[in-house]
Length: 257
Image 1 (cartoon, rainbow, N blue to C red):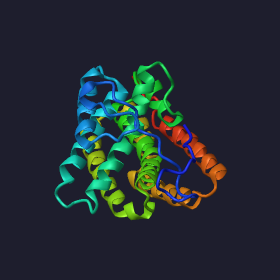
Image 2: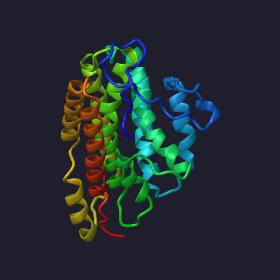
Image 3: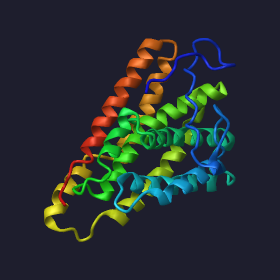
Image 4: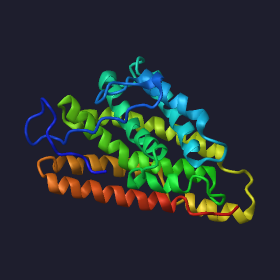
């Protein structure tokens, strides 16, 4: 899905494209008015409502539970001084999560999600894919595609330069890295059967959260520089969608039953 390039209300002409509103929640506990940004409490309610609906072994459910943990960590830090601008961070958190929830809503409605999310949704029940692969594939999509675009969405919505979010962006990434380490420890079989361990470790070794975080911030900088060039902006966002999809699918290479 390529972003609109119509300037946001209150943002000077040539500024960042208008962000897409997060998908409307399906559950009353998380409903927001059309075009409104969910509050953090509404976001958590929506994610908690969805969590029990994923059956055991569902790859999207593996990612969802991990991402719910991240969202709870962010919410817990909003009033502690961890984030420099908690009010703006709450908007960023909602727009960030909204991109994943839009994929969930599309799938529930029988529509294909954004290209970058399709590998995880298409292979969510493959018996040869390890749960850790599901978690890291979802992280790859959400960090490398959704996070930089959510930073740009937030900047456009608030009429600010995306560079003003760099500090809090890095703090979000620190939370993601913390959870990723926990997930690897919990899901990686120890000691794994040799027939599974070798291909699994090979697949997992191609992805690094540090490289994903660096690539995501580079995307913010590149698209920030293209904000006055709508055609180039659209082309880069489309290429990003496709390239992230390829890596996310590679992370889901079956390693055995």
